[in-house]
Image 1 (cartoon, rainbow, N blue to C red):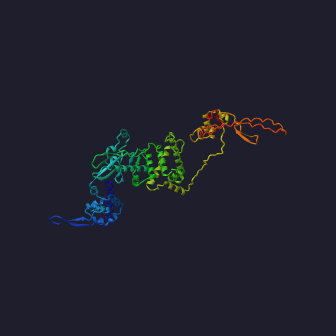
Image 2: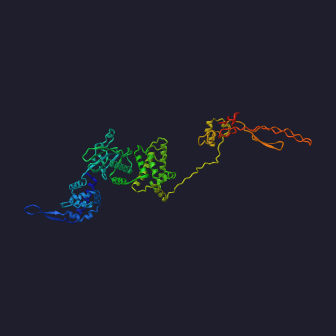
Image 3: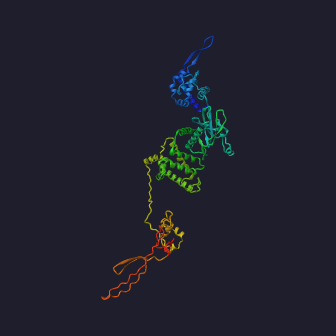
Amino acid sequence: MRNRELHDALREFALESAATLSTELDAGEELPYDVIEEPGTGSVLYRYLPLTAEFIAARWDVLSVMPPAKRAAEALGSGSEGYLRLRGLPAAHDSVAALRAMLDRLYEDATDFQFPEERFERVYAEVERTLYEGTMRTAVVATLQGLVLESDRVDLGAGLMLARGDRIDAPPEAVWPLGPGERERATGPNAVCALERDVEADSPLPATEARVRFRRLLTAMRLFKPGRVAIAGLGWGRPEGGVWQPVPLALGGPGRGEPWVLTADEEPELRELVELIASARTSGRIAWSLARFEMGCERSTDVEALTDNLLAIRSLLDADDDAGRASLAQRLGALCAEEPERPATRARLEAAFALERRLMAGAAVDPDLDEGEETPPRALCGEVEHHVRALLRDVVCGYLDADLRSVADDILVTSAEPIDIHARDLREDEDEPRAEVPVEELDAMDEAEQRDHPAVNSTVRPPDGPGTAADPRSAAWAVAALPGPRTYREAPPPRIEERVEVAGGDDFTIADEPLPVPEEPPVEEATAEEPVQYEEPVQYEEPVEYELDAGVTPSADWEFDDDPASYSAPI
């Protein structure tokens, strides 16, 4: 047998047809016969020939619309043309006509319609010979670590299957653990996944197809439910009747958690999910989130997988901006919980982000230790992974639109649950009084103490960037701006302006650095004979203008020497 899927589909159709035709006979319908002469010499011999083909033709309209007939026709596919040619009928791509020809062949010369098991196997062998002429059967097998099967074999369609290693033709290296530690822990043969394909006689093994199909199978199993399931990095393949050859796979790291158990009741659902993932074409955020989710499935601990799953949630709900991050928990609760449970779901997601921040800060976290929190870390990580798994599975299966952010918003709009909006004023209070440092206390500090003093820091802010000593952003200017002088000295007196009257009516104004003003002599009373005489005005030296470097502005605290180019500023 080279195609079990086709074999089982045709067998199911033959069994259902046998049951229907037998019911007709039991209800009183008669099977027609024909009397024919046997060839030979001597006396004429007659034989009764049951006309089963006519009996089947009269009821073919009922048999051809049964569900098993539709599945068998799909499995037979393009092989119908070759089988019709073998039976001497007009060759056509008609699977329904090929099924009727097979049923006629199965009950040829039969007097009843009890299912003939041995004859069916012979008829099926004829079908396979016509289908696979000029081809060879190949198989690629890989060990599925952590998988436990209730059934011996689970067919997933198109030649892909899960099976216990000792129930199919597989190499011992894939079926039995090899390492001493693995042998001690093993409870039986490994479960394997296998791909059986028919290829041209001179074609290589379908290793690339096997990698793609096995990868999708692993994704479907991880989306189906949690568990420790992974595919070994090395597989084995061979053509029919050949020797097993190693086939590199490298499909990911090991899983974690409990063994992944597949019950008989779960087999149809898994088969459907495998078909959906094989036909799905994910892209964008969904593809990135799915890859991130699978990275989390391959982490050694639940806590290590937390960041992968939180990143997947951010991507799925389009939480790239501040508004998206602020409403992330609200949207997740709308998608993953009923209305009464949404506040608790939001709270646990916030707790998961808080746990992630603790891990990023290097805190040691015991996954099973309850530190007074509502949910232990391991359970918190498991719940986040559950939400990611449910969202991705529903999107891949088509139950949810890929734009989950819009879906969540629609749910929140129609929900009766109130939406909490919190606001706070982020502006600084400019009227708040600032502490002042007394001059005596500030003079007693050194430069480092002044820089670290909270009252000083509240008054003088550090510069925005580096600069020269003349740059207001420089450190020198920041120190110079501190309250109080660096060296105590008397404040300079105010500038003096004096108007001096000169004989002849001219006067001029002296505006200079403060100089002592001479006292005027007492004026004697003038007489008519002697006119009033005024003293000559006091001549003051013109102020010295010091030439400074470009970009430097003098201050009242600066000191100048005789040399105009020599000046110093307090630092």
